[in-house]
Amino acid sequence: MSWERILQRKDFSNRPTFRTRIIRFRVRPESFCAMPRFRDLRGQEFGRLTAIKRVGKDAQKLSLWLFKCACGKRKTIRGTSVTSGRAKSCGCLHREIMPSVGKIHNTTHGRSRTPEWNIYFLAKRRCTNPKNRRFKDYGGRGILFRFKSFEQFFATLGP
Ligand SMILES: [Zn+2]
Image 1 (tube, protein in one colour):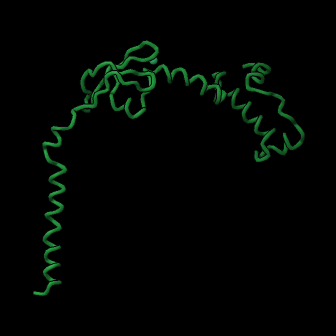
Image 2 (tube, protein in one colour; image 1 turned 90 degrees about the horizontal axis):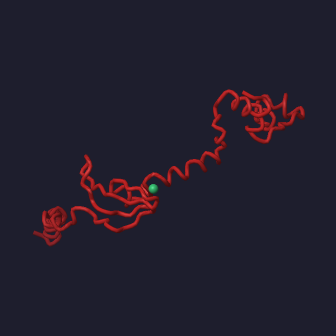
Image 3 (cartoon, helix red, strand yellow; image 1 turned 90 degrees about the vertical axis):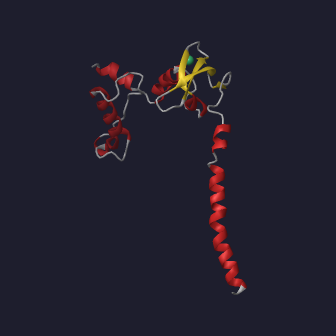
């Protein structure tokens, strides 16, 4: 037998054992037992939440923790939701952010997508957007859109 062939055979016979060893090492039951069963979050802060105690598991066997929010409320939330950063408060943060989001999108009048709002929106486009197919009859002829806001338009026309 040539050396080359011996080396090839050795290589071939060695590889599977090497792999099995790695796999065996990875799934060794002791390593599972040594792992903590859940991450201890007690006393840790995540945004407005502070973990008080672990209260059990949910249907997916994920740890549920009782959190104290900076606003004073207490809430049970899945530990992973908080550690991943998805949950930052009992819900108060979301409630505080939402009204400002409404302001940005100009929906504070609560009349978005109503007939009046559509008229306002379409009229504004006709007068101000040259890409609008009716712009030539409105903005193109020098018709200006005089309303500064929907509120002003609505107050003038009424419902
Ligand atoms: Zn809160």
